[in-house]
Amino acid sequence: MPFFTSSDQFYTCAKALFDRLQAEYPGAADAILDARLLISFACTNPDVVLLINGRRCPVEVVYGPNRIRPELEVNLSADTLHQILLGEISLPKALSSKLMKVKGPVWKTLALASLFERTQLLYPQVLRQQGLWPS
Image 1 (tube, rainbow, N blue to C red):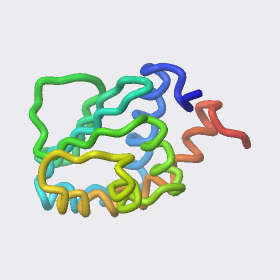
Image 2 (image 1 turned 90 degrees about the vertical axis):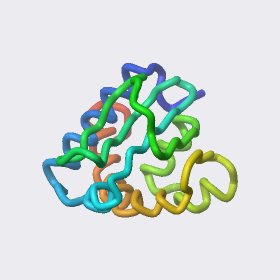
Image 3 (image 1 turned 45 degrees about the vertical axis):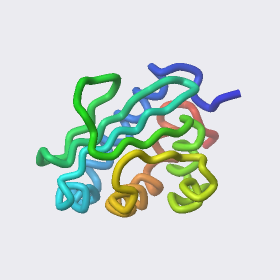
C-alpha cells in the first residue's frame, strides 16, 4: 500500500515541507539557483508532479501538472521520493538501482544534494504535523 493515499495528501505535505524549508533554511536551494536548474519530479502512485524552478529567486515550486518544460525530468514513485526524503535511500542509490529515472543531464542532480540534506531534517516533523507519522 502506498504511503500517500491521494495526490491532495501528497501536495499538502510537499507544500508544508517546502514552505518550512524556505522559512528555516532559505539558502538550501542556492545550488539550484546557481545552476539555474528547472527540474520536474513526476511521481506515480499517486500521480503527482513537482516542478522546482531555480530560474526564479527565491526558488519557486509548482505543484501539479504544468506546461513548463524542465531541463531535468525525474521519474519515480511517490514512495521512492518519500524514502529519499526520510534518508532511507540515497540519491545515488536510487539512481543506480533504477528506482529513479532521469531525463536530461544527470550530473545536474548533484545540485539537489544540499536541498535533500535539509529536507531530510524537516520531513519527519512535517509528516507528524500532518498526522502521517507517529510521534
